[in-house]
Image 1 (cartoon, helix red, strand yellow):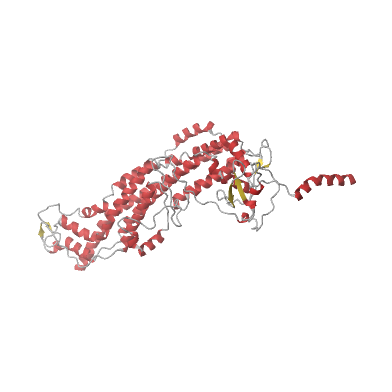
Image 2: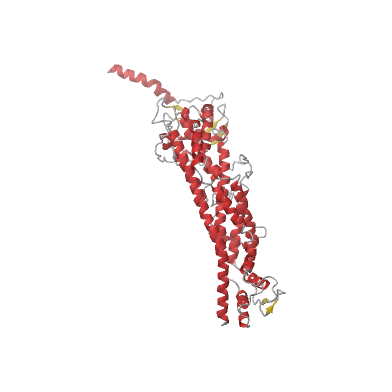
Length: 573
């Protein structure tokens, strides 16, 4: 009989606990799903507006080079989904590739090979062809996307923690006291008598003893979520970043248009004179001219159309989530009182004290038959809360957040529990790294959260690698740049563009390119293809800074003697 009553008491306790925890878990789950839906709708709307605007402005040329922009959107979406993209590298590569395409279009009368364009982009930061747009837009995208993804992950972690708490089993002493509180009064002839509220709280606290460390951690977690939510409503508002991306990029293009002549002259002086190709007037399938780069005629109309059609607001949804989460701040500390809602009122003169009817006055009536045992399941949940709290605080400060495989840090946390779960909430896996996920954390600059245009550190990733076919030991692959034609040198720093996999393919002014073919690795420099421009080595640069090509003896003989030989042969006919 006693065993049956114990089982019944345990079932009543579990049901009561589920009825309180499941609504909170469902709230977090629904809000997380809705936040994801709203974000993807916002991003897709921005992508659509971008495509429509650039299609009207550029036509077929944009369609030929649309991958430059669709790749950017794909990478932003991929970052929000799994956190594996380095946003700094993503934005750097995008603007470098855009610079290559714009430089080629602006100087359509010339032909550039891949190596020459690497020299062009190598000093992009010095020339600033797009003005301050890349720096500002990169800062805004980084802090907004990092904050929103961390906020969404915070919702998911909160949901999982609440659900997993239900898996923690109460102790034997808890079950015994539950039976004594709920059934012993009936056995004693006092059917229907309610337990005293203080007594009920003590019993529930005994049953929730493993939940006590979660109280403070949950409060810190909720406070961090609210802080990030406030950032997403104001300085980190992702609506204000994603919706007008097309206009910000058009501003960058117009900046290049205004300074394109000056930039081109500096590049030609530093990287060498380019190879003259077709003339500018020889249009190639709707080729873009500098005069056609002006967006101003369409900007105002497009902006008005977007304001009229777009009502997607992530910040509005974030505000709703923030309000709901704030209400759960004291959830765990108030849980015992909520579970005792059917107990007698505070100070009742006649209630069940566990042994008799009367007024409960002391807290020594519990019969604890065993010491509290350790719960690894609850330690896991506390670890989750502490980790995401630290990530939220980093996102709040505008820092980068790294994302690692959950199973990895959970396994490690079990081995280093005392070290990773401390009173100061310091977690060994916390850090920054542009939200790239796998890999060791890297230090990052801190962007002032309230200054939208603030930028204190480039946080520049190492996105330049050496091509196998350009790993030479002589001077041919040494690229120079200086306003006077010499000076700064970068040995074998080959730039890969946006990661599109171009290798040795020449860019044409029309924007088209030839499918790549991999060349074998050479120990010595291959012969240059005639008619293609290549930056010269330092030894070839004249002291005056003028960029002139040197001519080999064989080539000189061929050029000057060939006409004479032809004429001689012609006279024999």
